[in-house]
Amino acid sequence: MTRPVRLLLDRLPSPIGEILIVTDETGLLRAVDFHDFEPRMRRLARLHYGALALETGAAPSLIKKAFTRYFEGVTDAFTALTWRTGGTPFQQTVWTALTKIPSGQTITYSELARRAGKPLAIRAVGAANGANPLSLVAPCHRVIGVNGALTGYAGGIDRKRWLLAHEGAL
Image (cartoon, rainbow, N blue to C red; front, side):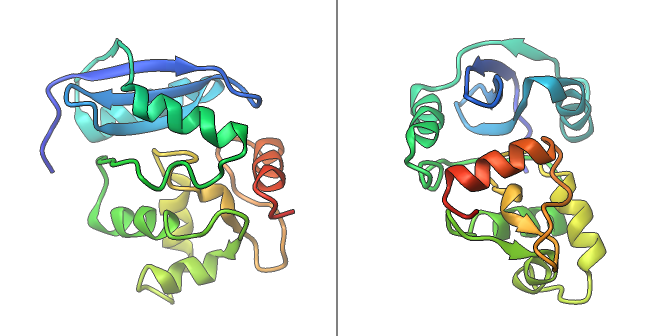
């Protein structure tokens, strides 16, 4: 992975809280999180990019427009976004598998493990899902428990419920 030279942090309002958008100097999306989880996002940024500081800066309009459109009801608005983030090859595989879950649908952790090519690694897939630095874009909120329970969303269960209802999955 090519390390970025700069990381820029932008903020965007949403119906479920301010969104934090991290891009690099080329405009490539690197991370997304909610404002109340900024410390977690900064920890992940340090883990993936070392001492590179997050500077205040505008995200490209294409990225901001995708978020605006998503919250306006175009729930597949992120499919055209290009992203690159740190993480192990296994995590990258899981995060890429998340992007393949269609809007309005949910899958279980065991199904995510199967789609990531590791059908017996359900717990490891769950951990990778929980470390997802691209909230909404790699839609980890679409992964549910085997019994249909809304479990394990880093942005909080209330947001997960809202997102799934917004997408028509509830």
